[in-house]
Amino acid sequence: MTTAPAPAPAPRISDVPDERGRFGPYGGSYVPETLVAALRQLDEVYRRVSRDERFWEELRELERTFTGRPTPLYRADRLTAHARSAGGRGHGATVWLKREDLAHTGAHKINNTLGQALLTQRMNKGRVIAETGAGQHGVATATAAARFGFQCDVYMGAEDARRQRLNVVRMKALGARVVEVESGSRTLKDATNEAMRDWMESVEHTHYILGSVVGPHPFPLIVRDLQSIIGRETKAQCLRTLGRLPDAVVACVGGGSNAAGIFYPFVEDEKVRLVGVEAGGRSNEPGQHAAPLAFGAPGILHGSLSYVLQDEHGQTAPVHSCSAGLDYPGVGPEHSFWKDAGRVTYAVADDRQALDAFTLLARTEGIIPALETAHAIAHAVRLAGTMNDDQHLVVNCSGRGDKDVEEAARLLGW
Image (cartoon, rainbow, N blue to C red; front, side):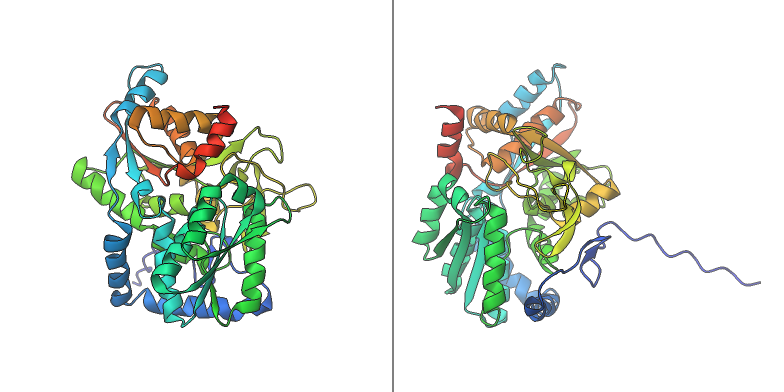
């Protein structure tokens, strides 16, 4: 009697992307012919070095001695007390902060730029370019370029340059040329457009250090892998400190790199609730927010298929957020995949809630967060208040707020 073969195991949600760079239906590579060879080279180099222990040893040493890793997991007692009182029940989860704001340059972005700088070195290229919104990726790219001796140009929307003047000065101090973009809405989308145009003309000697888990394959894979150090550390720190995994992990989502970095090591841990928080802006009306997972539809933006905010003609819609780093009409393809799979829940925090959380964290814990991070804090406080006393919630404190104090003061009327 013939025995039927055992059914193949169901694919794990973490087993993406495939060889074509697809996260389910999302991702891929929709680029001009001039970029195909550069992306293929990058894919081949990354696949080779990802199996090279020497590459990871060099990166780990840089993270330890240059970035200052591991970053702490901090128990936010006064924020916890506020969440419990605000929840109306008098109890709730203990809130912990993963302190990426304490990494060198003041945000998680350095995790990606150091790794991509090592890739640039292995491709024998001497120039790097980047796009930036809040300026933190620009600063991190300029920092890595200075460390490795690369020429560096950073594209930044003129409106973002106004809002983030401190980071413009930091980039120039590090030796980078900051190219302010006056086209379109003069924000992150427009800066990315110009960086892509530059790369098309300079691929032979230039590597584009894309700053988030967006864009054509293999960028979403590379950035996710390099940022996953956040989640791996968090997991180990929770096991050591709590004796178990957290009950919930919360992170803000623009393009989505800090969220992908902390979520990915937990995606197979089904009991850990994962929550991404988008920018609700002024309202739910088109053009007044930057929440493609909440209000968008699948479309192609900057070389990949993902959720995108679009108008009735399928054109990319205008967006708004008080946070320059979340002011983007698309999101990484893996976040789109996680949304459809139901593995990650996505919420929205508006400008007012984010500004309130900005001052709340500063005045309860003595930590001034980036406005991006403040969106995650706003939702985390609400969520923690609905949970039980024996539960634990971790928020990715993805960046510090030095860059935002002047804009926050303007918006708050200080």
